[in-house]
Image (cartoon, rainbow, N blue to C red; front, side):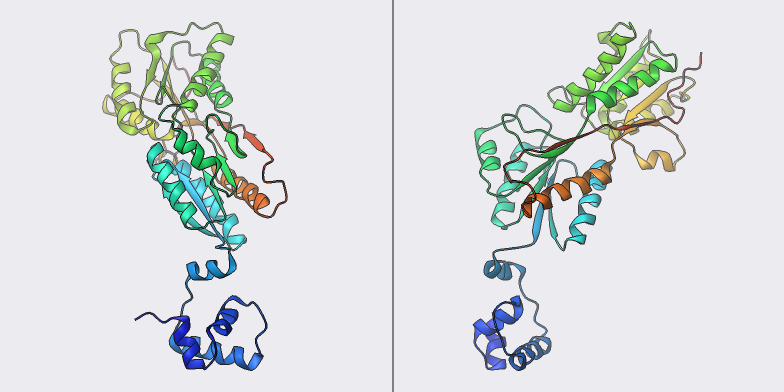
Length: 340
């Protein structure tokens, strides 16, 4: 049976208000009485409810995190950065995964509001469709500070930290061009996603600047997952006029591409050069040395958490829009080389 404040008050022979003051360290309580209450709390092994405490203090010291893919190492590192700053500021975290679905995102927003959290850090779904007035209304009228991480919300503006996907894709494609490639395929994500469009813009810009014709036969769209890139890579390898290099626009898709290449004994980069977007530590651990453009994910998480804390502490006005754009770093490890 759970111990309640009423039980403590009865055993300590004080009022429930006195017990509440001791638990929340608020209001005057004689030192003798405080010691008496604390002794009873220890004796009964009582753990105060965070929810009950929040009702009396109007603060939960909890922030919500909403991400689209909890199994993606990209978001794992972002959460790690958020957690480090949250711990330093005695803040708790509630984590929600949406599977990149707008309806689950809406459900998560409503859940977090019910939990009386202090603020939210969210990576909204990248899809430009699947949008609803209910979603936008919930987001804009939730009544607590919101920080976006690497994802915009259509028809609305919030402060946040964002990656320059156009520049990252441009740098990756240009690295392949500088290595000597002229036939460069791109395995991109879902066509209706903002980051897919931005990464394609970077790819096109690099090709245009180097007078390389953009050929539709070298442009592929997957699902930002292992399976789709695996199947697409097999199609690329079966082409009569196949490219000499592939730009793979996500860390999860690079695994599918590598598997397809290895299954057909395609040497990287001798038979096919590849470069990815976002690092994947597993690939490096296995010694594959795959070149990529990498966002500083842990630092992004830290920066997002610091931006939210600033809003919570009114360092900046809550309605002031602050946006920080981060250019990903190009890391070349040899997989981009052209070997005729």
